[in-house]
Length: 188
Image 1: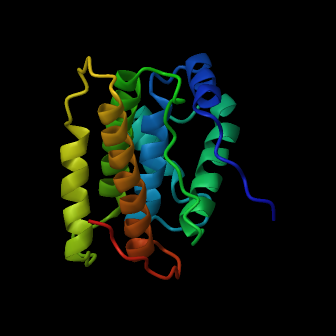
Image 2 (image 1 turned 90 degrees about the horizontal axis):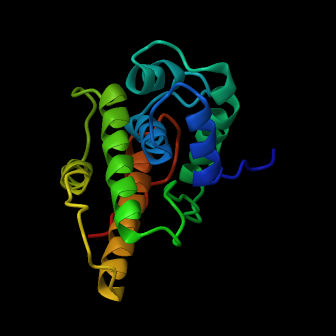
């Protein structure tokens, strides 16, 4: 089976704008990844109900969005399973202002926390590392995105946070997913 490539942020955004859903592509991807990393059953169907509840209050996902959302789900699941660490966050391109990318990152993390919380129960044993990652994600979701600093240092800090979130999500998936995935060490 060919790997499905994660759709581009702009393509997902265009599809969302044509629908009645007023959500950001980063939030959509964050929710899907949170569901995957929180332990939703990996069967291409189990994610749909909790996703719909979070994104559209259970009112159903428009038919026009289902193909691109399925691509986002499939590519995210495949990338999270990929031990070459091919997983990436769905964020705006580098040519966008840093403030826009930071806001999208905060939305991605908020979506991740929502999706993770929908499927991860308190009865499930999570390691201290996962608990720490989730606490860190909560802090990142609250980060101040009002910045006038487009310096190289601000860009570098942004990419360090993106890398931490990317690796943290991969770690959560490896520890809590429905599949048998070998664990990778957490980066601190």
